[in-house]
Length: 424
Image (cartoon, rainbow, N blue to C red; front, side, top):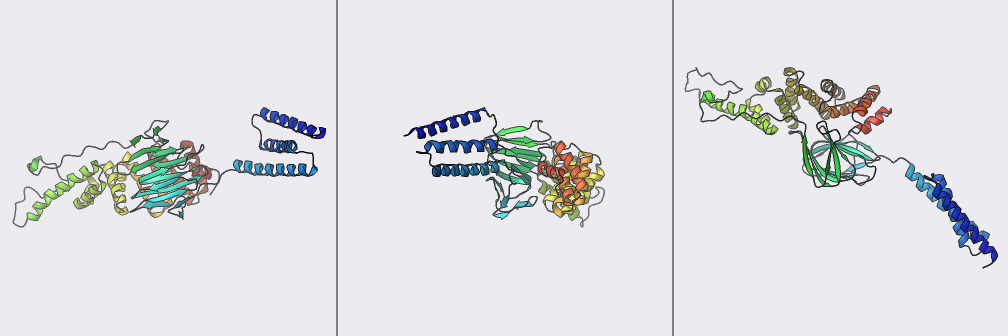
């Protein structure tokens, strides 16, 4: 090896040492600094590896260094640019934000572009309310979901059911929203979530595998009155809502059907309340229809009217549901039941008919009557959707600001942030 080659190698070592020391002194080197360091170090290594300072070899080494720097620039740029929002597919078909997905007789799967998956159990109804580069928001109206979120350091997923929100980083769990009992159930399979809600401590309720929890904000139901005893005397039985034949009227051979109807009416009058207390809304509604809807509309309590309205809504009888809800508002104005009835009337207009203006009016009524109620986050979020769908831009920005101030991590926070910034 001649003196000239040794000098070149020594020069390369000195250059490399200087660049390494410079890089160590940089606490947070910029992309440009990293690229320059790559370029210089590659050039120095090429010089060291050369047996002779051939101009052709040096040119190739410099070209290789430039290619490496270019690849590094593309890589750094790709890491630094904002990510695109997630997309999802419903059983292989493209999914749309805001569109309801219903699983009838079999499970339905939602596959997201980040590898996450949400499965709807039979009888479940849900929709994706928003998507972003870091995650998605899913609203569970009723039924059960199996959620598997791929873990990343900055993942932001929210699954909402009733007044509750399940915040997810990366995990697998089952979540069920029982509309009749107004109860959220979370069963962890892997990982950890945090549940937020108006009746949960301010920091939320952490749930880690293999834990399971049930949460409800509903007030305890009143105990059902005892059923009438067929062996007891008529005076000892509870009075029926449907008046029976007068006791003073003389019996006649033509009256057996009337006498037979009285015990049946009494059974139905006691039965629908017992079914409501047990959470069996369908059975309660059937008893009320046999007894007479008009009779119950005038005598049921406020919470009972709301429950019967929900029973009719779930039975796909919207006109009957509206009668129960409107009776609750007329007879119990200012009560929690009246406010809940307003929310449900808005919900029927929103989900059933796409009547955005009507829905927004009812949600506004609920928010005016119960601004911190259990259903306020959902009422405000749906109001925001209504304003967007009606293209009421000023109203949408106003509602978005209110939502972000009250629920910065809520299920509609992504939509609110977009609308607050002026997006349509």
